[in-house]
Length: 400
Image 1 (cartoon, rainbow, N blue to C red):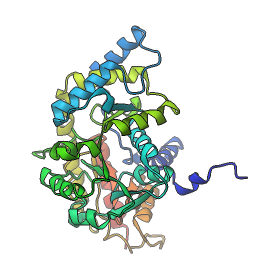
Image 2: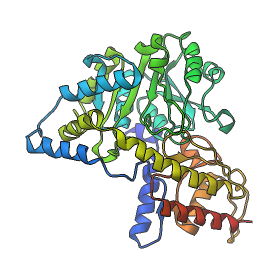
Image 3: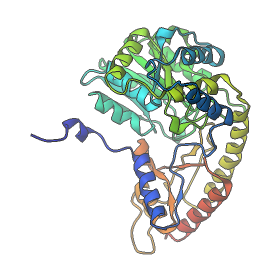
Image 4: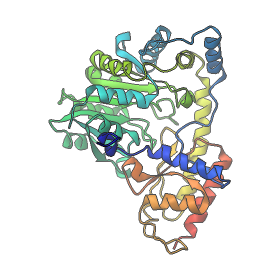
């Protein structure tokens, strides 16, 4: 009898987490490593949110809380969905989890039966396929390259629908590409989905407010209200409010799915922290002016990185519309040799080469389901980004 469950053989450790651990271990050894692999803002949690958490502790809000969220948090979430997205949810249609990943896990565990299929456009956030596999489902990966602006088309969607399709996952703005679905693009996808009433849709909107220039954010449940009862709209406080460590995600969706998710959660972690819930209430209800300030800083960083990368022979980088990542192609690097005579065979080789030769940690595109690309986060200070781009430039010049 094996000690570990067979299901562990289906999945891999989170690649982004693994790379961050490796890079930080090198740092701890005294090596000069620039870590551009993390998916979190470098800004502190705003003061008003931290003060709300302290107040909650001082006032004794430290006991068990409902897994669905405290009444104040439920109200704040309902108001947020109505104000920002024009979607109306009742308290029975709201759930709070330990981060957005936990919401997705609960949803898949509550709804997937063995061999149910989940359509996942690639590049995707690294955890989508593995969560599906943990829940006995089958990820159906649909490659959406730069020629499609990294977005699934209606024809691609319909071509991949079978009688086993249970879910479609959409992420906008995207991690890792920063691509944003327009209202028309979502409307055209909805025309396909309306023909298949047995399919549910999970829209991961975690980067909703990190969006640039004149790009407008739209989510499927507001674009096509006829689909609302088949959509789980996911969001959270991690990215916009710089609260990655507070671990709080939330969603709105059909009562039956929410009830199933809460049933799963009641037998696992029960709820996220009561203090995180109190802080999230202030995040959603409080001052939002800092978001634009952060976004303006992200734009400057993005432009710096895109310009620098596009000046490197063999690398091509599109301009992201949201989130805080670039996802450049390294197609022109593949096949080149290092000074040691090693051939760069794929994007993972390239990322290992950058880490080992210049101490720049990024994530290879294969981890997101689409090669030959790589992801760098620009959620760090400009001096670090300038240094990183100079190191990447130098490394590429040393290839032949």
